[in-house]
Length: 298
Image (cartoon, rainbow, N blue to C red):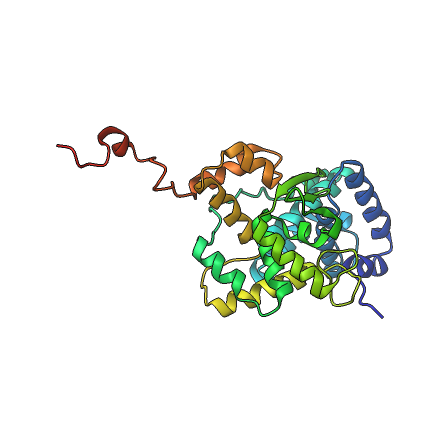
């Protein structure tokens, strides 16, 4: 028997939460929010319901603040998990007119930290490290196409256009399709992988044949590769995407094209990579070089 999700457990423990969660899900579906976003919000709220064992709408302001303080101090969730809880509660309290609870929620300052990126040499090391061809190709496709982890999970064999050297990314984070280029070298790796692994529908199978790979399966392949390389940076699978964007800018691709290839809704999201990318030393970006040439003149 499969383990029940946090949402299922919460609805069983507090029956009235089932109606609340269904209304929440309906609102987010109508608003066009991604399934993963909605699930993450409900999962964090469900954990809180299980903690108190009654509806979040019945909490006092003190209880709410106490819980938020508790998980920040004792469980040390990632910032994204904490955001999911606060943003989810904000929507829920607004829906059910719980003004006092809504107003008691903290504002979350946006992080000013720039993302960590790999050097091009580190990317080469990572991509040649996994023993399994499947994992080498998997990480290669994620980097070469700048994919989000869920986009890699959702890839089907038919999404790869071998003739046009393109990959069709369907219904990504912002519910928009896009095409991204894929290099011939990665396509050759994909061809070898398809011939040896023979997946049916999903490009990357999970543990069971015919099932798509899970996010955790991708994370495991990535973590294993990083451990073997000895790279000490604090990284995750998404670091491959950050590195892709940064390297494209360093190679001279314009910011609008990078935005489109990443599938960003707003160009300001893409612009953070301008602060990371090193100017190409062969591109003549140095102002002194423009003024004085190569410095050999007197």
